[in-house]
Length: 199
Image (cartoon, rainbow, N blue to C red; front, side, top):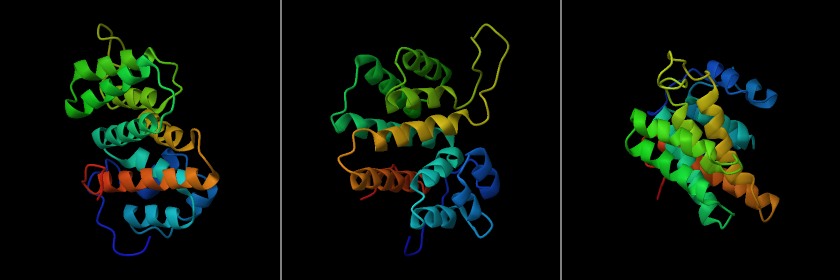
């Protein structure tokens, strides 16, 4: 990535080795970790090396929960806008995920889980909603002792949403790469404090 990159101010975890490991980045991406001086530079190196899915993984596992789910929501909306088949439970799941982003309270988190469970987990919307549920709080029923989400669950859900939106029904390999790059542009903008819709 040419030029100076604005700092990533919306990361929950900026420790590159830890995120690279927890995010299950591939061997080629792991090889770039020792030379990485900053999250911004590391993501840029991944993109320059053509390791686009690893760049998505890194952002998905390092963004703050609310920002990460918003990124998944944007990818899911793009999936819908591209004309991919979506059933009512999927649109309900996406609406629930978006509702949690705008008001991240417990009721909306639980609603997102219910909506996700009504889907077949075949679209990005399902994973955006599960990302909302795995953002924090207990994953046990409300009347039972609290159980925290698995450590990598949120990042995996966000990665699943973004990558699924990028790889579904591409017109060509170049189209799939372009989608990855477009979503990464959104994710980077969000990491920098933007709304994911850079001009």
